[in-house]
Length: 169
Image (cartoon, rainbow, N blue to C red; front, side, top):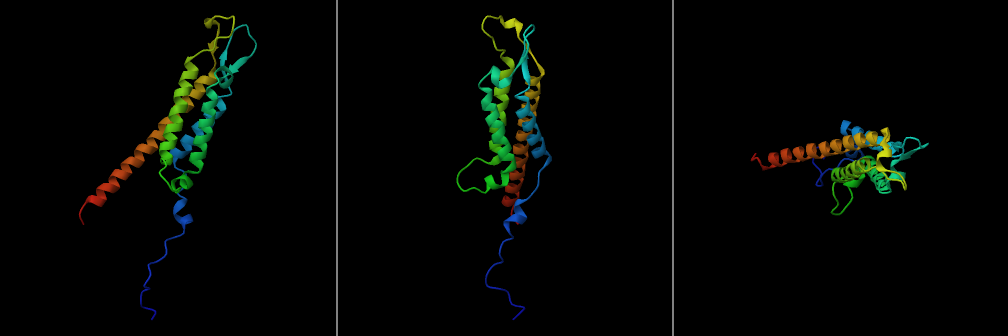
């Protein structure tokens, strides 16, 4: 009876063997850029001649706290991507979440860099830019482009898989 096959199909491999695919270069680029963006929010964004001190992003523009929340959300999605993709329900894919979070963070960062704050009693020309906003802008751009690249590469893999399924054997 050792040569007979079992009437039941084999059990699937454990989830741990299929879930741990590791971090790709795009994951590292997104994670690194988001961490740099998180730090750059608190670097000096604006400076004024004759005034001691500088202003960081969130103290200059309150809406940049939303960028802080978006960067934390993007980090959570990058770290827990496999767990998020296994959640039941009709959720967006982790890649779509990353594109949305990094895209909105990029738009708000552009707005924060473009707008110079105007303190009471001073002219707009007296406030200049500092390096923090530009670092944040570059980091947000890299995070968004990397997230967009991951989504496009997954879309091309999905199209190739559909073409293989459609081809007659």
